[in-house]
Image: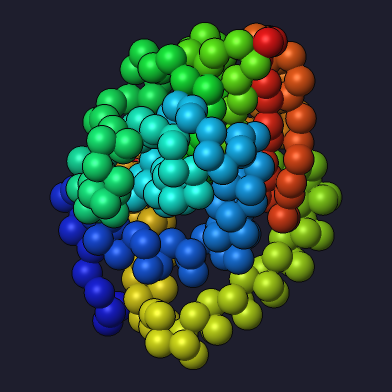
Length: 247
Ligand SMILES: C[S@@+](CC[C@H](N)C(=O)[O-])C[C@H]1O[C@@H](n2cnc3c(N)ncnc32)[C@H](O)[C@@H]1O
């Protein structure tokens, strides 16, 4: 295939880090940016309030950058286990000085710093179902009383719903990609090469994804110590769950 080459000796996110911010909003469909924007609008703090936020699986730190820009007194700890993604995040967050703290660590084992808010977007689908209870318990334990977690991710729905909605979301997706190509943001070659690379990495077990359902995640959040976890937003499979720990 013609088009850009991805270095397949590297891990999936290391190989795509340089093009992530430009391509991910196209490849992931219209619900990617819409979901990120809505997460930021859901943050339950006033503009001038001082609070500590932790982002898990921050990647290039779109959510952390958005939170720091909207909440000038907030401090954020952004955690990811991929150096190349964190390098991009570091450049993006440089303007926020000491308010941004980037850490390279595994979300499954890192001690979650004491905080008022935990955010995560499109990271939970990389966590095996059997590791979710421990991760969610760590999150609940890290949160101060009354603290909040907001999770955005692709979540599985029933097979028939999935099939019918798949047709509709596919139509929307193709229109979204066509618009990005027409605007000069990317090319069809680049999109094809990125999907081919993703399929290859998936086949080689280097890009592992799990399809959690919202119902399963909500149950796991309640078992982990959240007392008011609920589904607050959905655009096809992209779903936002919000939970609070007891005050
Ligand atoms: C699909 S990207 C999402 C990045 C960003 N949150 C966003 O919405 O654009 C998934 C990110 O999760 C990170 N990740 C996956 N598993 C992780 C883990 N166990 N611990 C920390 N980061 C992880 C990857 O390195 C990658 O940056």
